[in-house]
Amino acid sequence: MIGGIAIVIAAVIPLVLHQEDKAMQSISNANGNIQAGRDVNIESSDSAQAIKQYDDKFDNMTAKRRVAGIVCLEYLSKTNWDLVTNDTDGLDDVLNFFDLMGYDMESQRISSNDVYEYFCDDIISYYQASKEYIDKIQKDDPTAWVHLKPMFETMKNIDAAKPPKITPDEVYFITPELVKYFKRETNSINFTR
Image (cartoon, rainbow, N blue to C red; front, top):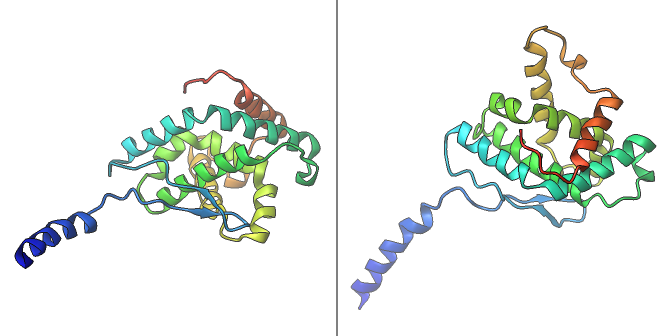
């Protein structure tokens, strides 16, 4: 009997210790609630495969992106987050998505060049439009979206190094370009890249 239990334990321990990296990664908001779980399971060590999984997830976030786009358009027209009346849950979801991607980029699960090729304009647009919102949330919770700014800076650096070479500070969208981007985000048609 004891030998049978030992065999079962010996068989279970390797299974417990050898789990794939699909553990939930939580990002806390100011109230300590879980904002996002790892819903992009990176099952490949290949960055191109992993970024494709992110791309698929982003394409399936149409409703959340639409809500985020509406909030960003409202902010761009009012230029003050305290005057924004729309719910920011959709924006939080998009920022959580990009923050998780930034974490995976920092931990080298995905390459910065792959992120740039798939998401540069999206990251720069969302970060630029929501920077003051992010700063406001981080006053209460300094751990919120900590991987977003480094990823934004990396995207600017990569873009600045491409011809014609410019400084990273020259990589930004002017307000009319942001308005155009977020109007596309609010479109109900799920567009493809």
